Image (cartoon, rainbow, N blue to C red; front, top):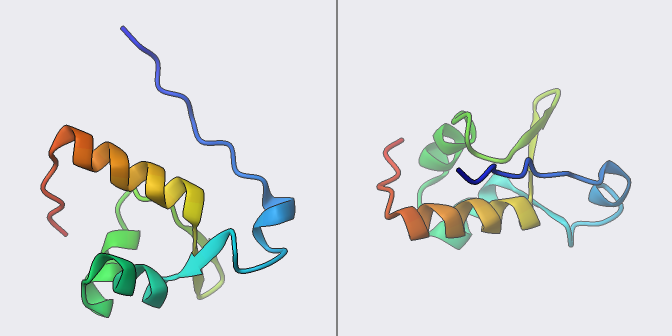
Length: 79
């Protein structure tokens, strides 16, 4: 049985610029979904997001990894 690697996130580079993270609004646009659905998606335990107070950021590398894994599994993402 293959062990899944836990994603290691470098917080020193994560906040250095917007190249490594995206806002919920950007993620919604990327997926072609509404903003409410995007916020619901960030509440999922398997979705890579970081909450800082009221702000939610999404590490791009972890997001694309999550998206690819969902596509390979053929998961229907019900939010």
